[in-house]
Image (cartoon, rainbow, N blue to C red; front, side, top):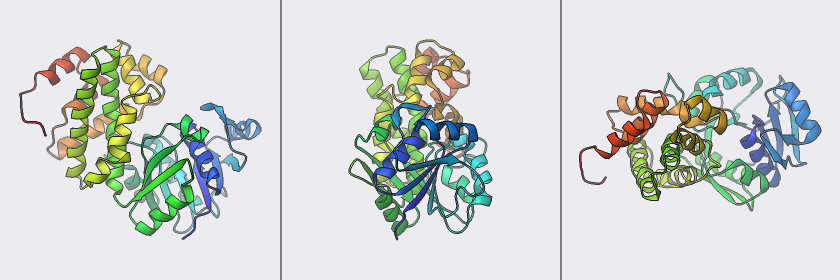
Amino acid sequence: MAIERIAIVGAGAWGTALANAIARAGRQVTLLNRNRESADAMARTRVSPRLPCTRIADGVSLGAVGPDALAGQEAVLLVVPAQALRTVARNLAPMLVGNVTVIACAKGIERGTHKFMTQVIAECLPDAQPAILSGPSFAEEVARGLPAAVTLATNEEALGAALSHAFGSATFRPYHSTDVRGAEIGGAAKNVLAIGAGIVSGRGLGASAAAALTTRGFAELFRFGRALGARPETLTGLSGLGDLILTCSSTQSRNFSLGIALGRGQTLHEASTAAGLAEGAFTAAALVELATQLGMEMPVATAVAAILDGTLAIDQAIEALMTRPFRAEG
């Protein structure tokens, strides 16, 4: 199974980075902007405003989403925010013909429905083959060709292997998996935990507190994933623990940066303006609600969600976490 023609819907930083990475693998890549005016500007400059320091590779075709934009494409990557994915998928439905693979590149849980991204794709595009791409990767580094490894999960082993071969190069290594839910859980939950790690950093609570929050946060992520059938090796792999480590330790992460700003006393509006779109801010409530439905406790994620919705002050949240009853580690 050879996959050669690939479209990327969403020409922000991550969409542009993936376009460059897949073009390096020798595939025919089309990068589509959802706005015609922005698409024309990018075609002239070969630069995305969201990634101004990196030129779009010459092998990438640029255009706007339109009636014929997806004709003949064998795989489509949706690189749009998690909460916008349903609307975008619905709009693309008339443009997709046949059994096309549609790969979500957003890390989140849909608010209200508590659906994961491949579930949204399956609902909106019933003829498509849903997949998820997730893992520890920053757009600027991937766009520049620095080494990165990610997880590419789909329900069919052969399809996952074909996609990994199509996308992979000497600097971009996708590991394929059939644990779709596990890959999605890691990406969604780690964004929420990264906000918590940022709050710890912004509050100046020290490296010990940061290590404790990240470790206990991962324990929550792991329990949550197992409750939904995720495999341990996925949760401890690139899309789980790997992405958590990256996102909880670098200001390149919007979620971590949002947390730092909150920890320093900024309002959520001020912090969001400075950090940019942080998926974890929208996923936190959905994650906690889903955990509650499963009868699970997620103290760190719950504290982050309460801080974000304004029902708990940061110092109160820290005190609540530190005064929980003593128990065995696990």
